[in-house]
Structure formats: C-alpha cells, structure tokens
Length: 430
Image 1 (spheres, rainbow, N blue to C red):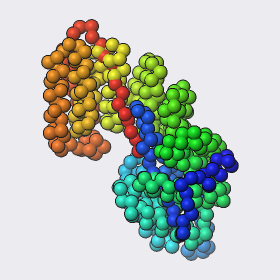
Image 2 (image 1 turned 180 degrees about the vertical axis):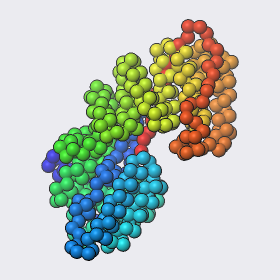
Image 3 (image 1 turned 135 degrees about the vertical axis):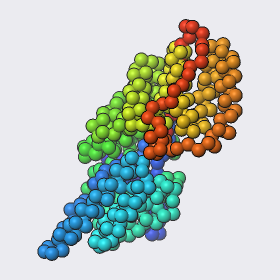
Image 4 (image 1 turned 30 degrees about the horizontal axis):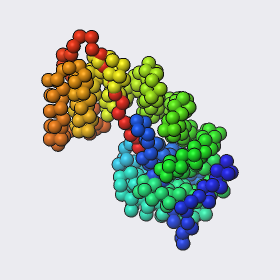
C-alpha cells in the first residue's frame, strides 16, 4: 500500500501550484466495446458527514437545544442530498445542499458550510456548470483550511478532483487527488484514501496505463474492504472487472462482477445490481456460454422492469435478441427486437429506433422476407423526422402514468421453423 501511495505522490504530469488550488474528479468514459462504462466514486459514496461535523461539541446551557436542532437539520439535508444524488435527481440534490448551506450559515458552522459547498459544487458539475462547481469547491477548501481541519480539506480537494476530471483536466484532477490523499493519510481516513486510489485508477485507464490502474484498484479494494466501505468496494470491483474484461481475463472479470453484485444486493441497490448482471451476461456471451448469458440477461431484465428503467430494459431486450439470432432461434429474436423497438419508440430514442430497425432488416433478409426487410429500412429513413415529436422523459411522472408496461407489438409473419437471438447493445452509466 505504501508503494502505491508513494507512486501517486510523485506521479507524472503533476506540478506544484503557486497557490493551494484544489482539483476534482470526473466520471470516466473508459469502456470496452460492449461493456458499461467505468464508475467513479464520488464523495457521495457515503451518506456520512465529515467526522468533525457529525461529532461537533455543542456549547453548554441554553444554546445547546437550538444548536442541536440546527445540527440535526444540517445532517438531514445532507442525507437528503445524498439520496437524491444516488437516484440521479440532481436538481433535488442541489436544492437540499443549498438548504444545508443556509442552515450551516445560520448556525455559523464553518465545517458544515464547507461540506454543503462541496455538495453544491458536485451537483453543479453534473449539470455542466463547471465554473460554479470550481468556485464552490474552492470556497469549501478555504473554509476547511480556516478551521484547520485536515479531513474536511481533503474532502474539498477530493471534490475539486471530481470536477476537474469531469472537465477533462486530468493533470489538475491528479493534483487534487494528490492533496486529498495526503490529507486523508494525515487524518487516518482509510475510506477517503481508498476512494482516491480507486479514482486515480480511472485516470490511469483514461491514459491507457492499465497496469498502474490494476495495481491501484487491487489496493483500493483491500483498503475499502477492511474499512467496510461496501459501496466504494463494489464500484472498485466493478471497474477492475471491466479492466480485466478489456484484457481478455473474462473469468476473473465475472468473479469480480459477481462480488460487486452481491454487495449491491446487500445494499438494496437494484439498479447497480442489474448493471453488474448485464455486464456478466455480456462476458458470458463473449465466452460463448450462451445459457449463462441468457440467465444473466433475464435476471437483469427482470430488475430493470421492476424499477421502471425502460431504456436499460430495451437495451437488454436487444441483447437477448442478438443471442437468440446467433443461436438460430429466429422467432425469439424477432419477438425481442420488436419488444425493444416498442420501448425505444415510446421513449423517442432515435438512435435505438434506428439501430433496431437496421437489425430487424438484416434479420428479415436472412429469413428471405425481403418485403419486411425493405419496410424496416424505409422506417430507418424516417426516424429522424419522427424524432422531433414531443415525448415525456422516461423517468417523468407523466411517463410512468402513461406506461406501466411495454406497448403491444406485432410480429410479422416469418417462415416456419425459423429462430432468432437477441443482440448486445452498449449500456453506458454515469
């Protein structure tokens, strides 16, 4: 572990700044041809407040009740913001963190203000408001340094790393992580250090240094597992699995994904569990272990349907269709492609619609159903014109009310004895 940390401290592309300029980490775009993208551990990986905020000593006598109530509201707003972030509700998270900042200002709680500013900065970054995100993270750092709190300063540096990473400023992100790791080491914060190691590994992947990334993820997993930081451990295991998959180590990748999925089950994180199962299915498909692939896809599909993740449902249906087609089960392939198409059409997903019509056209050609194939290709030509039609967002209340199940579809006539297999489409996450 010491050698790994030392490598980060003296890593390339890092120069000492004239002033203490924090950096932030970004969601990576590293992926294999068919597997989901890397996950980065944001500071929201834990709902805990900075230790000093959570254990802050209240003054005696009459001030204790009012300040205790203020502290409770601060903690509630932080947890609310964290939950909204986990659910992808960025606007709601931003509102919660701003409320936390106001509560902290009213109570003159500088450390809570610092953490709230980190939350505002990170959610602003997700909305593409990078200038505001950097300003908030820098203010958070100033407050933490003013209080001489090493852990809070490390957290602010960590947040800066996130933002710089999202902006593609990898040297700045590395510099911020370097400062964050130093602070976490001094504060004896094993979880924070594990998060930094995992996120720096993502930066290594972005720069194609896979051996360094593997070393860091192995170290991060050991650190996070010992500290019982399950969410961070699961993400590190997931990312390491993607790295192994890219280098052809499919069996090791599947084992790591299964461990991550087990953790997500224990945490009740159904969406992440489904993503892991989805990736496991893709790897089994690469290994030509079709029955295992189908089982994993079906498990992922059931979860996606249960949590109303319609886009992911359509993608898995398309993958199932490709598997069936490859195995010669053309009827099943057609059925699943049409199910996927019905979902893509309802979502107004022009790319998904176009790709699915193309796959259907090719499949009909294989079945000598040339009229049906031509109709599919004609539909492709009209996709962009139709894409302008107003559609409710797939996660909106209007959408959920209008559609609780995929719309009905019709399977065109095909020759007797034909079979099909579902195809695999890339599923990206952020």
